[in-house]
Image (cartoon, rainbow, N blue to C red; front, side, top):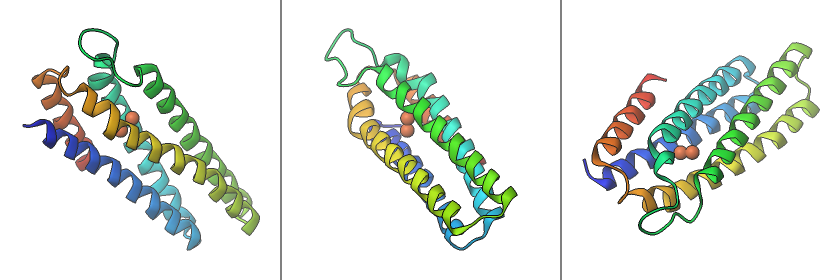
Length: 160
Ligand SMILES: [Fe+2]
Ligand SMILES: [Fe+2]
């Protein structure tokens, strides 16, 4: 398995997450609340699994050391991961609360505003990983680690 295969899998998984979130928002604007909530739960599960794999396989190699140092240290990626987890948790709670009370147009606008922030942070994060993290790590990453990461990432994309 080549470096570009792994990068391709990573890009594909980022794109799949974006599509899943887009489908969730389509359900929101169609007022299909139960389906919107289900898709948001799927997004949250898949994002959480994705983050867990990156922190297990990639971030331990994202440190200053021999060779050229990464542009952004692992703490930058970890901070963004925590932010993404917090944002997705917040919109999940907000949607559940709105559904309990009966979703009004004002609640929907408020939810979409919050989701815009989540989308924005996720898109920047994915881009930073694809253009920074993974490119800078490919020489440090042992072949076995890269293989394992790719295998696990594919498993997540097929399971959830
Ligand atoms: Fe990430
Ligand atoms: Fe990622």
